[in-house]
Length: 273
Ligand code: SAM
View 1 (cartoon, rainbow, N blue to C red):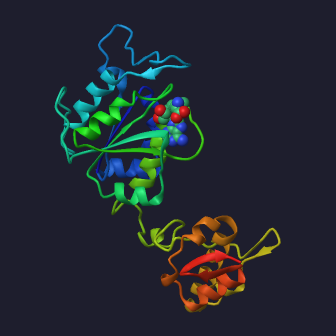
View 2: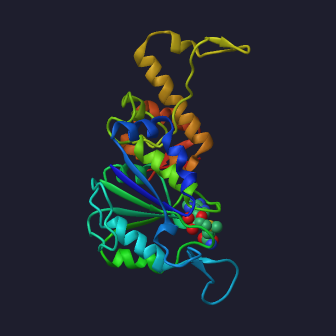
């Protein structure tokens, strides 16, 4: 996969040299390129922003600068060694991600879908954000554009959001995580649950012992215990996720456990008693 990130603070993205993402870059699994938006400015001051039409506080990022930068990057094939300046956007090619607190909230489902793409381009805004015509223009040109928020709060810039999304997507690329089985039962996976609590050695620590069943070696009992804890934890912390569960995918033990937790099936949906 190729990922291009455009920012006025490219140094912010240095964290992508570390850990699994850094290793994936070194091994060639991930071709990640970070660009300074100011490289596409033409004035002496390398200006990327201006005052908002209609007045108001703050500055807005100029569409012309973003347009020149994105035309150049979007027109590059995923495995191009160099980016040709001034090219036309290639419809059906790259997927443009615009982090914004006014976007759809980024979830594991977005990460899974984006992990199947060949080329992602992330446009990191600053100030009051990027002129709205940028997303509109590329959408109209046939580019897949996703305006995504990493949560209901406001950051100073899109760089941290880019780090979050790139890490969530990159770990799903085949070959990225050493043991792919570790991805299967994770929180927010296909089961729609939070993960059960996990423990390691020593078996007793700070006066706390690990649940007996985990030492039993009895796989079916361990599996059931983990499933019950996952249901319990999800009901306690994320009732919205329990309400969204597909009832037909639950077995009679799941339903009994949920009943104990105060959830019953009504008209084919789980509701709290
Ligand atoms: N004026 C904008 C608003 O109220 O929606 C907020 C702009 S914010 C100060 C500057 C930039 O930070 C945004 O363009 C975006 O790139 C990034 N940003 C801030 N919060 C974000 C969030 N929750 N998710 C994704 N990006 C965010």
